[in-house]
Length: 186
Image 1 (spheres, one colour):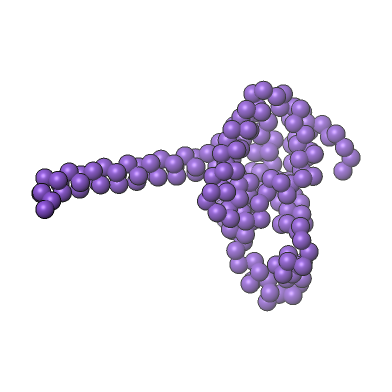
Image 2: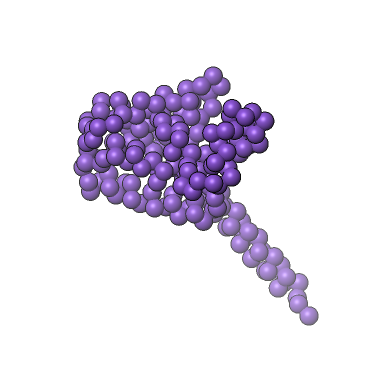
């Protein structure tokens, strides 16, 4: 038979473990959210023009209701928690490292814009626009451009493939104002 003292110790141990797990989860969740907004992301030198163009965009709060998406809403995948944390961790290591060891002006931001599908995840778009398919089905003019995407008839379609300048208004102008010259013709 188990003694009352043993049960008390076991209960205290379970309580301590539960408290540790709960506090750990709260700390991780707080850190994830604190490192996903534009104030944090634009604090690096090379991200200043990106932050400026973001604030001028509808998604950056330049809208009638003041709503804004965070950087991680668009630039981190939302398909599952493991993929989200993995990509966020990679960005958390690579981006600051490149800021330190590489001249930020050597980053080809204009070229990166041509490959925006690598940096913006449809799962992020659809997290906020989750009813787009249903709401646009009732409006043929609205659904027509999205039909191929939703039925999957053309592989490789992406939200930012068509919506090229979403998220960062006048980004090219802001990049040039901060010293990033175009390396190609648009």
